Every structure is written in structure tokens, then in C-alpha cells.
Length: 236
Length: 236
DNA sequence: CGGACCGTTCGGCGGGCACCGAAGGGTCCG
DNA sequence: CGGACCCTTCGGTGCCCGCCGAACGGTCCG
Image (cartoon, rainbow over all chains, first blue to last red; front, side):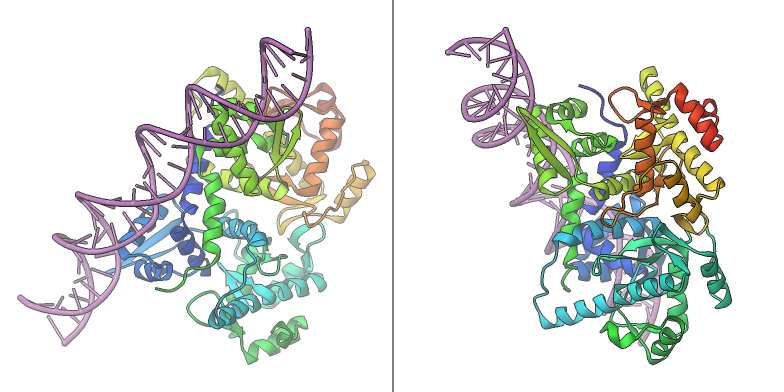
């Protein structure tokens, strides 16, 4: 017997954190980029508060979640964008075979709102995210044919529109994130996050419901049309 | 109780495939991009043949591995580059906290050969992979500052050197893959694979041992120096 | 055809872990 | 200070799953 790769134990331990349906449900919920309380996650996952507490403890200990205690509440969120990316990558790998139909009308409605426009951690996804990504590409601001990177005109565009691109640590400026409803990459990374933040700050979109879905406002219709030539009505 | 995200079960099931040390050891071994027999993997992971057989069955059923039966052998390899990328991503996430020292001299030697130059599925990694990636960037053939993409001169370079870039399916032409010894991205994607294949075909490198480590040949020294200005001796 | 080899199936064992309810500590508010 | 609320800790239970050895079927070779 040869010795196993020493990284195997670590890989198995990390994957084990995702390998429980309750913990997976928590991580997917936290993909909206916001902080949730332990109780909210317990209700969302359909388990007792004590069970959720144990799960959150493991996820925090494993470095996947960051916690913040405020009074009698324990707020928890994804530790960083690397963790978010990992959750997205795993979810994207699952999606191909997981094309099941929603069973109730409400779920179908929520599903189609999610497919139309949502956030994916801190950037835009769904048909809206794809439309924006394609528009940037069509305008020569983003290059997808040889990889995934902003062009020099792209850098100038963000600057001209007063959307700051904070180069923080080693997070890439632009990165493709596989959209698991559209099966195509949308813009993520620093630029994707900046654009999403701007869209929310400028009132182009507002969050609907308690999770990731967003809705394009009338002001957003105008802005998307002027800047990108996107007909938001066509996203429905 | 609210219903869980329907993707949670799938995510948990997928992660469960990685969440066992023996299966993780198999997947890491298969990151060399080649096909292994069931028996080789059993010995490598240090378990009975029957145990390995069960694990491989699960990995194949889960779509992570492709199998090919030849005579009395069952050859198995990673299903595609998307799976390889997932294994790499998980391993990269583990690495930060997993900086433990090898315990034997042999392991230390193997470890440093791996750190010097290795393949990562189908592209080059280790100090060699980083050096090539940096050289391409310095020559203006690859752009890393605004994402990760080949430039137009980069496309021409591959063409001029007779290294074909087969645009297959949706695999990106260039992609950054986090190197878990160097903690920086090296070139992956179609271009990374083509370059690695060329390096092996042209005799720049040869595989050493039975796993991922490679060694730069004398011809490789000359080629790397001429094309990229890399001093291979400095990688040691 | 017999023996060596590779892989799979099966029964059984043991450990780990997700789950719950009850009890308790900490925080906020009237 | 008492009660409502949020969360955690603890004991107990049941299930799942990784592991092995033994037996068996298939393949190759002398």
C-alpha cells in the first residue's frame, strides 16, 4: 500500500461540510450574499433550532462561514467570495441533471422570478445577468472569446460611469460564473460585484421576497435600454 | 418550515462523493489526467480491492468518472475537464490550512519535485507552470490584470508555433487555475492543455514516477529559454 | 484445460453523524 | 425583576456508510 495523497483528508473534510442536505440548504440560502440569523436558517432548512446551531458551528469552524453576534442574535454569512464561488461551482455541476419541475404554482412563480433576475452572491445572474454580460461583450467592453477579461475600453467605461473597481487582494477583476439556469457564464469578480452594487444603489433593481430574486424597476428599464440596449420586457 | 432549496439535495449528494478520504485520494490521483486501473487506485489509497470497487462504482454513477473496460481491467479517468476543475477548486480551497511538512525524506523529495513541475489534469503547474504563465503575460500574449484571457498577439503566437487551439464545446480558451503550491493562478483551459501537450510531445518535459510530477529535459531548457526567457535551473 | 490474475458481490461489523427535545444561559424589554 | 425570545449544550436514538474477507465470474496465458 502506498501512502494516500496527504491532501485527501483535507479535501474529504471540506467536502463533508457540503455533503449534508441541511448544510447545503443553508449555504445556498446564504448565496444571496447577506447575513442570516441562525433561526431563519433553521426555519428555511426545516430543522430544529438546535440542529441548525450544530450545523452552523461546523460551517464556521470549517472556515466557510463568518459569524457576527449581535445581542441575542447570531448572524452568519459566507466567509468570502472564494467560498461563494465554490458553492456556485458545485451548484453548477449539479444543475445539468437536476432539471426537475417545480410542483406548486407558488414555487413555479418564484422559480421564474429567480430565472429572470437574481443575485448570485454579489453579482447579477439569471436572464438579466446574461443579458448584461452579453451587452458588455457586444460593446467591446468585455472579452469572452479568448478567456474572460475586461478590455481597455471596458476599464474606461467603468471609470466614466463612476463605478469604482476596488482591486482587493487577489480577487480577479472579471471572472465568468456559470449561470445554472442559463447554462452560460455571466460576469462575476470585482467588476460583476461593482455593477450589481451600482444597479441596486441606483435603483435599477430591488430585491423581492427574502432571497436572491430581484426585480427591474422602471428606472432600471430606462438605464438598461440606454446603456446596453437591453429591452427588459424581453427578459420576462 | 419553509421548503428547502430543491438544489440542496443534489448539492449534498455531489459533495458526498468527495467527502470520503479514499474517494478523495482516488480523485486527486486521477488529476494526472490519465486512466488508472481499479487495482492501482486501491493500492494507492490503501484499501482492499473490494472497497475500491465500490467507491469507483459510486464515482462513475455520480458522473465524476468515466470508465473503460479492457479485458480483465477496468480503467477509470476523470469524466471531463469540468470535473477536473472542481477537484482543483476544492483542493485549492483546502491548501491554505493544509501546510504540513512531509515526514519522510522520500516524501520530501517527491514533494519538491511536485512543487517544481507537475501536470494539473491536462496543463502545467508548479513553479514551471507559473513561470510559463508569467512569461506569456510579460510578452503581452496573456492578460491577467483585467481577468484571464489570451490577447490577439497571443492567438497569433499559438498559431505561429503550430500549437492548435481546438475550440471544443464551451471550454474556455484560457482560464486561471489556482496553483496550490504557489498560491497563484497558472494557465489552464484549452490553451493550457495545448501548451502542456506540446511540451510533452516536443520532449520539453517527461513524466517522472507514476504520478503528476514532470522533469524538464535539456531540450526543454533550451526551448524555455529561447521562447520565454525562462532559466529552468532557477525553478529548482 | 488448469492456474494466475483482476474485478465484483455479499454478509456482517463498527463507527460516525444528523436529528430531536429538554434544560439552561444570555439578551432585551416592559 | 419577570417574561419573552434567541441560541447552545447535552443525552439518547436510529440510520447510513466505509471497511473487510470470502466466494464467485471473467479474462488471459501457458
